[in-house]
Image (cartoon, rainbow, N blue to C red; front, side):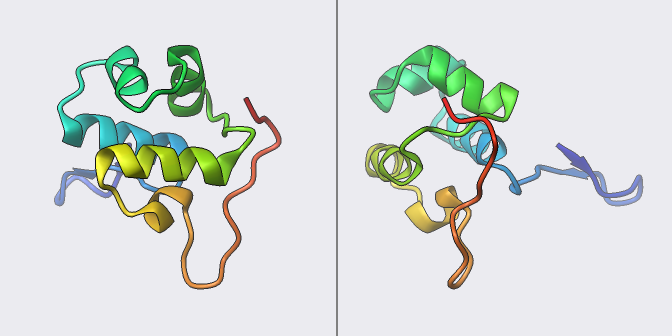
Length: 94
C-alpha cells in the first residue's frame, strides 16, 4: 500500500500484479489467499507468490483472463495494460 501523505490518508497501490490481486480479493470478500485461488481455479501457492512475493504467472495473459472471467474485473486493468502498453514484466515467473 502506498502512503499518499498524512493529510489525505493512504491509497492502495495498483502498480503491480500482486497489488491488483489483493484489491480483487478484498472486493470479492475473500478472506484469504486460499479462498481467492480456489474461486479462480488457480493453485493457492501460486496466488500467494503472485500477491505477496511479486511473482507473475508463467502464462500471464491466460491467467489474467481466467481471473477476470471469474471475478468480473476488467482484464486489461488486471494485466496492467494502459493503451498500447505491453503487460508488465518481472524477472520471476511462477
